[in-house]
Amino acid sequence: MKEICSLSLKELKTWMEENGEKAFRAPQLFDWIYMKDAASFEAMTNMSKELRSKLAGQFSFPVIKLLRTLESEDGETIKFLWELPDLKRVESVLIMSDERRTVCISCQVGCPARCAFCASGKEGLLRNLSPAEIVEQVLHINRILKLKGERVSHLVFMGMGEPLENYEAVVKSIDIFHHPEGLNISQRRITVSTVGVVEGIHRLAKEELKVNLALSLHAPNQHIRKKIIPYARKYPLEEILLAMDEYSRNTKRDITYEYTLIAGINDRFQHAEELARLLSGKQCTVNLIPYNPVDDLNLRRPEKEAIEEFRSILEEAGINTTWRYTKGKDIAAACGQLALQKS
Ligand code: SAH
Image (cartoon, rainbow, N blue to C red):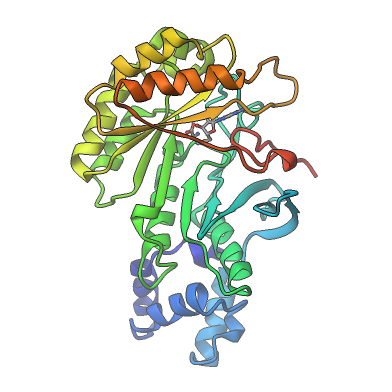
């Protein structure tokens, strides 16, 4: 069976026409799913019984099932564990800070990037998620928030997986997320984070999209980067940065460079100086993420003083920095802590 949430509005219109229905049924269906939170086709009462049963016969909805939620002690972070149709599992994280309701989405089961400091890639890639499996993570969480009169405001592709290695499904899901008749989340509030898949960045730069792009940089040079990020062997830093510049030129978006600080590896003041030189003149922000502990990894987070020194060197060089205050550590929901969950 096909998945209804894998279809863009355009594809739904085509389906309606091919099935002898009026095209306006497509936005109506979109509205039921994304705005009115219908739980099944049966509930879509302004559509004929015949159409509803045809839809139910051809499409599955929903395809992912919520297994459990885990809430951080401060109540600001909730981790959701989902079961997929083949019983594999993925997680998403809802981060609530001030007015923001950010969902951190997974786009693959496992991850092909296998970065040395991250739990998500420990066992490599199991499979890609379909657009519906991506979209429904947000749809379900949005439904839960609506009960409190809130809604999802921001999306980050920073859960498990490498978005640019599941390109079509990710772009399709973005289309549904930002469509005014879909979830209506502005592209300015959607961020795709990549380990640096050069052809994917070029491709994204040519789409008619204007989402934010973040690069997981984590090192001031190719030599250190290669030690901690296996993908760096395939994609040299120089080429990645050129592709990021192209993205920024085409979309007029500032780039975010993510930098996970790991003690003794990339956190020295010389590294900060080198990083400042590497990024000088770019319209960008460096997001410093102190390393979050992952089981079995023999890595450490730098002392607070080292992090502050690193940050001030960048700031003195005129580079914008943010320091990602780590949320959800007590429930293993922080950056890099989403791991494969077995049944
Ligand atoms: N594959 C994409 C999406 C993952 S985003 C990417 O690489 O960008 C998750 C972010 O958290 C990435 O920047 C990742 O490098 C970072 N991260 C991974 N493990 C971490 C850890 N243990 N501590 C802090 N940040 C980590």
